[in-house]
Amino acid sequence: MTHPAQADKPHRRAVVWIDHLTAKIFAMGLTGVSPSTAHAHLSSSHLHHHANSIGSGHVKDDPAFLGAIAKSVEACDEVLILGPGNEKTALMHHLQSVRPKMVLQVGSADHPSDEEIVAIGRKHFGLSEPRA
Image (tube, rainbow, N blue to C red; front, side):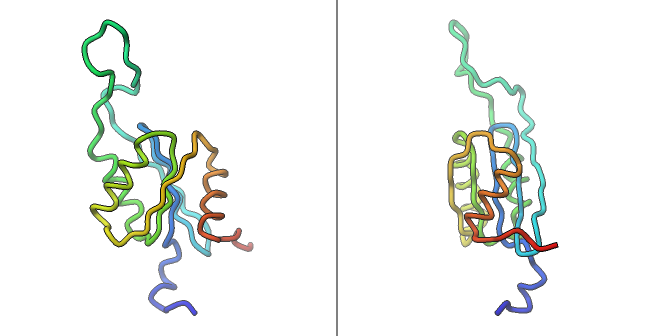
């Protein structure tokens, strides 16, 4: 049985796909999916190191990026974080620091479509398609 206070909050879970430029956030619950997107504001989107150049080839992170994602999932109790690189781990650590009781899991997914991300989230959280 659902507690009455929880009935007002249908999207208590989210799946987030993140790379160095974009986070696709899909809050989900029994009543459907609410998508949103966060974008990093970097000095460059190019991350490859060039031979005979000065510097590491890494672009400095946008500190507001992880905060914007955290705000998007602040109502959630559980978050599945997907992505191709290290950003998913950085997001996990950020969310652990701002929401220590949030249940977090991390998985790899290169560049799935929005529909594939939602399907992964539904399967992970045991949610079926809402009925029309």
